[in-house]
Length: 148
Ligand SMILES: Cc1cc2nc3c(=O)[nH]c(=O)nc-3n(C[C@H](O)[C@H](O)[C@H](O)COP(=O)(O)OP(=O)(O)OC[C@H]3O[C@@H](n4cnc5c(N)ncnc54)[C@H](O)[C@@H]3O)c2cc1C
Image (tube, rainbow, N blue to C red; front, side, top):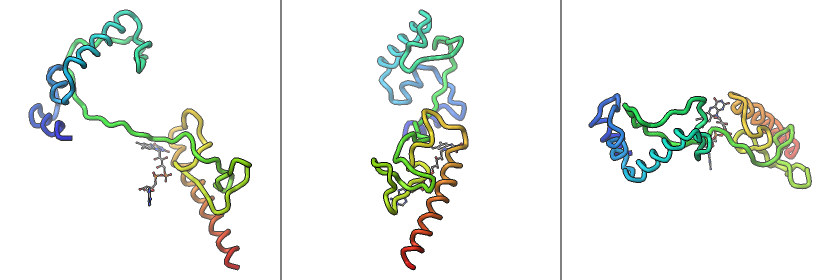
């Protein structure tokens, strides 16, 4: 991101700058951002922070008023998948008639049905390892059988 480099050069490592300047440095439309901030502050003041989109769910929400403000480049990411093909205990993909599709396996992020709504921290990698190994073992046994 080009603005990130320029921002650091101009403001140093702390990134401490005035709000309007931060908005401009990010290349965002100042008027629209200020309007959003105004609406945000009004909602907080009116006790309607939880009705914002996205909701602001702090126990004691506060208005965006007093600086210093910091500009932090951020990107969205997906840590977990919730959905995908159904698999069985050998990580075989199950078809719509509840039968395994021969030779098709899914594990880790490619498999669904292990987590619902939220995952237990650390369990994704555990699931990857366990079902990846199960799939590999089953596929190897299948290949061996086909060769014999
Ligand atoms: C920011 C973040 C934090 C996370 N924190 C945790 C955590 O604390 N604990 C936890 O358990 N889980 C965590 N996860 C989730 C966990 O990392 C994933 O569930 C896991 O890495 C998925 O493993 P995978 O092998 O299924 O897929 P991936 O790790 O996505 O591996 C798929 C691989 O296939 C390769 N690939 C894709 N297409 C092709 C192709 N056509 N040919 C060849 N190679 C290809 C990709 O380059 C990649 O290397 C986190 C994920 C993220 C993004």
